[in-house]
Length: 291
Image 1 (cartoon, rainbow, N blue to C red):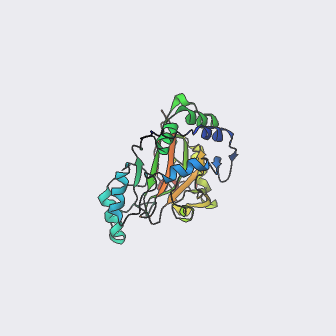
Image 2 (cartoon, helix red, strand yellow):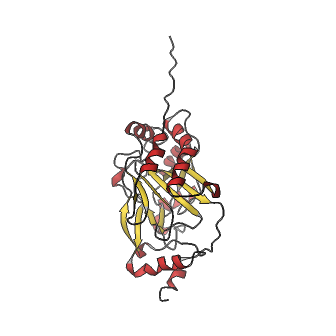
Image 3 (cartoon, rainbow, N blue to C red):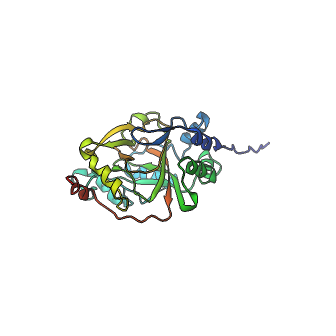
């Protein structure tokens, strides 16, 4: 006799409550840090999901195929490329590659975002919650952001080896950002792919002052050598939330074996609908250093 089994449901509403009650911390800049965002059983279900925990790949091409089969697709994202062939070529012969990021970065990565979760899976319920008003109202209230003046985006993303974003404080159009580590490997905390939270070195203090004094000029990426890491978000199941400001410097440089496991995050932003600013480059900041 066949017995129908009702799919398990997941209630993530407690996440909004954790955000609302979490204290602010101020080193190296104002942010919220939640060490254990998801309840243990929920986190196990998320990270054990076959769309999150992929089988090991024999080579880069097989990894890309596995990601596509799991519902991920390469996206346009800072510090990365959507040109898979160019990325595979770089992986095969880095020293002679002509597609290396120039300027402030040495890496060349790919960001994959999940497009469609398996129906009724833990990830399906999670993405439905992340698309709901519950979490965005909680985030907006926590950081006193007018939701009517903003829009949101979020997703589950995997970042391949070589992914790099040099220190930056985020552009002024961004009102809030959050990141949650949902890495499927139990060795992920020791791998080299975590976000650095940073401060300008004393000799570069003029950069912060320039951004403070010129609110119509946008913030730009700066060289790694201009900043000092104060904290890294290595802990799995941790969440960091902050409203971009002139001191919210953060960066990532991934150098790890992505064939076995991949850096996996929930990534989300709140954006201002209208915010006009003038782009800038770090080279322009050199010119103001002696002012």
